[in-house]
Length: 342
Image (cartoon, rainbow, N blue to C red; front, top):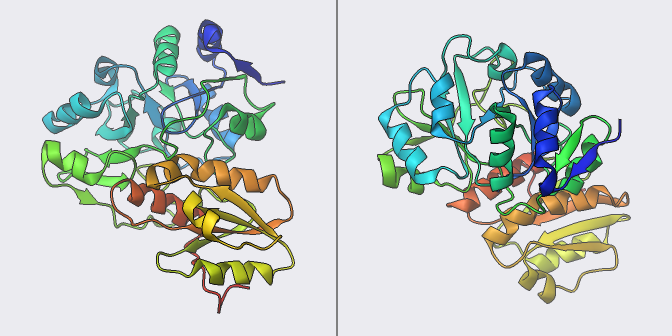
């Protein structure tokens, strides 16, 4: 099977594939998702197979209206409705208790909750409307690899494994949505994203941040909580704030292989980088960096002599919290230290 890249004028064709139980990757404002009819268990199982995704990692269900959520959620708390009114469509996923039997265990991971998302991307909202069903939508990549922010990234990982990809160009935000658990007494952010803790608290008051580490035999309530994510082939090193980048450049010059360098344009312009340094600009600020992080990590995957990637850290506040969450996972928590890096 050769995966087809659908133009926006071919949404009807893509929707027909979804109705037939086939897999179609779709764009959002964050990353590309791998779409299947959330009510079709066989189709959802194929999502796991195409990605190589662990079966206890629950899926986010994408909708195009609050009315669609009402069909499947056991209840929608008043505070959840306030957040939907403020941030939907947008980069906020809300976990709610689900009606018994509304979705298969393949979607829920066997939990009594489901994560719902209303993406801010009109072509995908049209796709859901034309398919007439909610869609599961984990990131459309090989499990564990950096998330896809272009249709080309999806094609690289999943060509021949899925029916098609709806191409809407590069995504705007570049890191996955904020996941907020509203099924508990105190709402808690399980995954940071572009909708920040401050944003949410301005609408519903005090919430919590997740500090729970998911155990080996425990099913996570949201993606990204348990398994390794966002990792390219090369080892990623986080370059902390205050690090002397000239010291980084010196270390690079001593390596017998190429080293990827991901930093703001101003840093790259100031550095005297050696010949074995391969640059990728993260732009001018944390917003740019969040949009470009996965693209950069993927770019180095195609350069086989790049055996290490040094990447700029940002303050872990607001969108920076989401950026650092993804960077820490891609690096496995490894920070650059010239005295310890081999």
